[in-house]
Length: 112
Length: 116
Image (cartoon, rainbow over all chains, first blue to last red; front, side, top):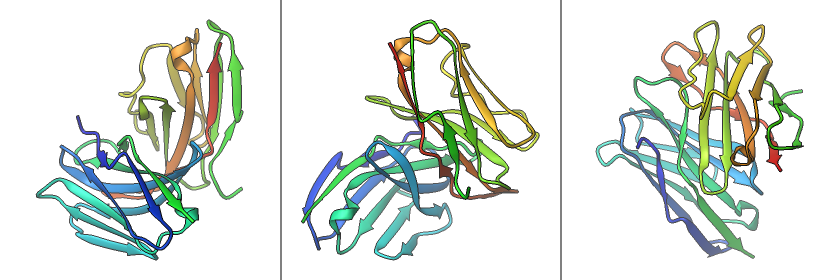
């Protein structure tokens, strides 16, 4: 399957702590994207990292990509209660159309 | 509006009826995608439109599902003879696509379809 698989499935932390979510995949990718979803609707794009990139930052978010291990990680630093959401990685495969194949997500709970 | 819009936001229909779901992409975005999200299945790709190219229909689960995109903008996803397993949130997204460059996809709020 091309599907990305997130790990862990669920994560509960205290405000101020860092949260790390991992994504593994099986195919060659064009790019890998991370999305956040609140309350089962409204997917919000966080970061897109291309296959020739190794790390990207956006505010409190840091994404790494290791194409040799076919894995990516999303780090949220100094977490806030508002970061509580489900986080998905999505794969755009090399040689395929632009469709995204999503993992099943990590449900993050940040406790105040 | 600045974002992707979808209508209706909620739809309840009886098994066997046909439904149409609408998506208005962001102006200027050449690519449009349909996905669905259901419990236990996660987010599944359905269909992808890019410009005047033939759509990628590889994700459509059966021939009861079809979609069209008129004038390179608005898209309609049609489900004929709905079944209970079609119950899900149907999400539309749009993006820029330019040559070999890929861009992030912007998602609409979705249509929650319930088949009774």
